[in-house]
Length: 153
Image (tube, rainbow, N blue to C red; front, side, top):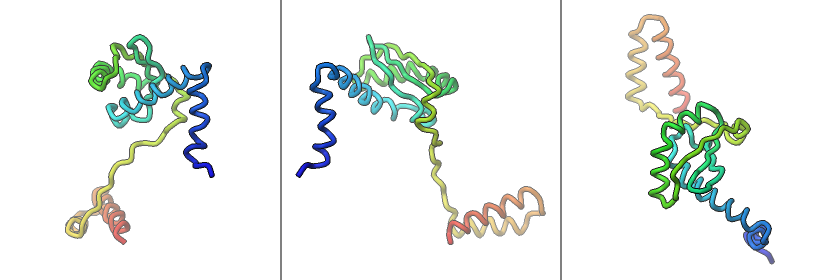
């Protein structure tokens, strides 16, 4: 009986041992390792939108989704390069390139943690809603109450 792990590893082992593809496997592993160190060092807005593309002669090429991401990455590239060096990567320069096709890889926004209002807070907002004159603020407070009461049950 074959284990799933052994079966799934066989093609990777063949690629690593095949002289024609061993270099490709080495590069792929190196880029994955680089990506694993790089991603947590990025601001949340850039995580998932920056990919390590190549590392040649101490120059790291990063691909980004859009010009705005490239601009933000350029602002932190020196600090990022220094961080990567502290993690054991010999990187003197970061080159940033835009690949608009990368946007299809991940388009999710970072999920924000939602907070629930406790009973005391809900009662305070309820009291406030009763004291407010009709208008946009009173409407917003009523909407907030309706939303949070729906979450409770």
